[in-house]
Length: 374
Image 1: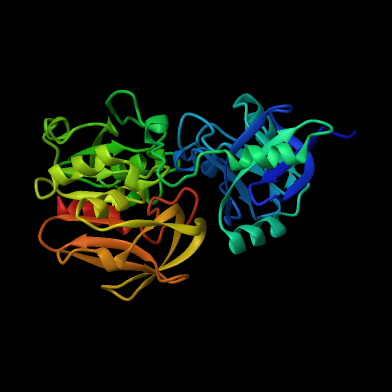
Image 2 (image 1 turned 180 degrees about the vertical axis):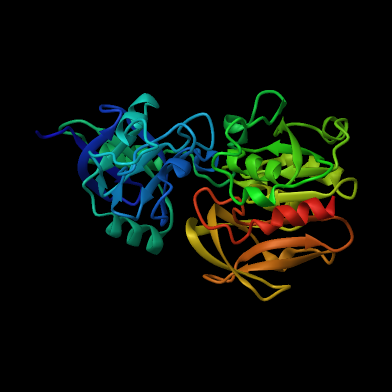
């Protein structure tokens, strides 16, 4: 049985026809990016860092192990849309309780399948991430869809944290923490540390790993002031991942300036960029970003290589780091800055995801480093 036609229209004028998936008849818009992970599509789609982005998966067969209630990184799908070569009609996994198609439908997310994702990735690698529209229907006007893609706001200068941050502070409680915990035998013992996590779009597995390493975590909105954060009398402050242009998150940059030197600080991804901006560095937009689960990063201090999970479209310019900030990690794919530390106060951050989900656990030691710093 044939399904409704779908069209993917890019701002460079390219239009690609396929078949509609997800919420049939719906439409999505955003920045088209690609992710090279072979597994973890549920975690990727529910990662708030993908807000405003349409995700192309390079792995050709997506959805084969279905969806479950435990592997979500937020309250629902955060990505704007989905592009795949093939969406599996069959679900086969003992943990699955529904199909990816059903999950997309219930979240009102449109997608497209039956397209050459290799060609799409080559376009994005050559010309850069670009704005797009996915529309479902027959006899769609391709030229009109391209024009609409060109009118989507650019990711440059866009603060998306208000769309993903918590509305009110809360204490992290995870009832499933022991069932799927990584290395439960190494769970932090002794007196637990009080951590305030500033939520720019935080992933749940970050909260799980902080708890695993002995931290009691209170999550606060992205707009929380330094005074509000310090009022919790934390042992340390965590700056989370999140979507959009870091230089546009001006309130948080000022807040981190006000917090520097007062408590140990650890940042991941957008948190890494905000910490860097707070000490005077600058950020820039990468051509097509880093999104996948096998990015090699070198720890400059030890020389060891970590295989990392990454998801970001901006990077810190290491040439702009002030004298009191040093680069601690480097991305070996393109030599971009993958981590910094301050030399005169307890603060460090990385441009990747040590909590993985999905991805390898090579960098989980960074949570231990944060606890030791506290």
